[in-house]
Image (cartoon, rainbow, N blue to C red; front, top):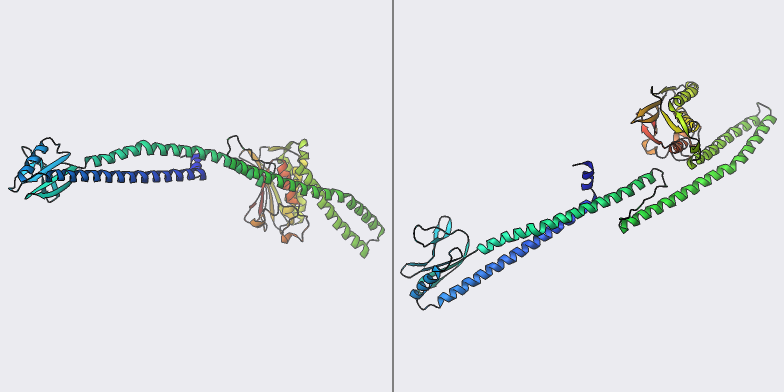
Length: 448
C-alpha cells in the first residue's frame, strides 16, 4: 500500500465512511436474517397445518381397512421425496410408500418399494396418530424450507454486496475530496503559524458549505492578526522614528557637556555614563527601524548574487581579534565549491555578525565558536555553533521575539533584538532560521 493510500485509510472521513458502511451492512444482515427466520417459521407453520389437514382427512375413514386402502391409493400418486404416507395396520402390515425405522443414529424414513429398502435423504416434518388400532404417519419434506436458505443467500449476494461496494466507493470518493480540502486548510495554517499571515485558504468550486465556513473563519482570523501585527509594527516604527531626532539632539548636548566638564571629575564620569546609556538607547531604536525596514521587504529591490564563502571568511577575519581578546576560539569552514544566493550582502553580513556577537558575548572563556557553511540537499546551509551553556529548548521560540532576553543575559550588553533582526533578514531572503542543541552549546542553523 502506497504512502498516499495509507494516509487515506487513516483519514477521518474515510473512517467515518467505513463505519457507516459497516453499520449499514450489519443492519441489512440483521434485517435479512430476521426476514429469513420469519419466512422459515411461516413455511413450517404451513407444512404443519397441511399435516393436520391430511390427518383429518384420514380420520374420516370408517375403519382400519378403509384407512389402509386410502393410504395405499394416495401413496401411488405421491412423490415420496415430498410426502410420505405410512399406515401400520392392526395385523402388522405396512401400507403406503414409507416406514419409520430407528437405529443407533436416530429415526429414518425407509422406502417400501420393490427391491432393497433405502432411507430417504433430507429432513421431514411428520405427524403420527393411532387410527382403529393401527398407527398412521404422515411426513412432509422440508426441502422447500432448505431451499429458502439458498434463496436468501442469493438475495444477499445480489442486493447487499453491490450496495456495500457502491457505498464504500462513494465513501472513498468523499474521503479523497475531504482529504484534499483539509490539506488546503492545513497548508494555509502551516504558513500562518510560520509567520506568513498573508496566507489564505482558497476554497474550490466543489467545497461543501461547512468547509467554506471554516476556511472563511481562518481567513478572517489571519486578516485580524495581520492587521494587529501591522499596527504594532507601525507603532514601534513610528516611536523609533519620532524619538530618533530627540535622541540625536541629546547626544549632541552630552558631547558639548563632555567638552565643557574637566576630565577626571565626578561630573565627567556621570556624563560618560549618560553617553553610554544613550548610545544603547540609540542602538535599540536603530535596530527597530532596521527591523521594520526589513519586514517591509524594501531592501529586496537591490538583491544581487552574494558569495557566501567570501562573506563567512570575511566576517570570521573581522571578529577573530574580538574572539581572541575574550579568550574565545573562532574558526570558519567553507566548502571548495562557491555557494551563492540572491540577497543583500550588507544585511546578510549583519545577520552573521549578530550571530557571532551573541556567541562571543553570552559564552564563558575558552568557548569554541564555529562558522560552518556547507551544501545540503543542493542548497546552502549556514551554521554558527558554540560549546557554551546553550539556551533551554523551552526558550528557543522566545529568544526570537523582540526585546526578549534570558535572565542570565540581562547583565550583559545587548537589547534583545539581535536574533529578531536575524530572523527578519532570513525571511526577507527566503531562508529559515532554527535553533538546535549542540550538546553542549547552541547551534543556529540557516537554510537558504
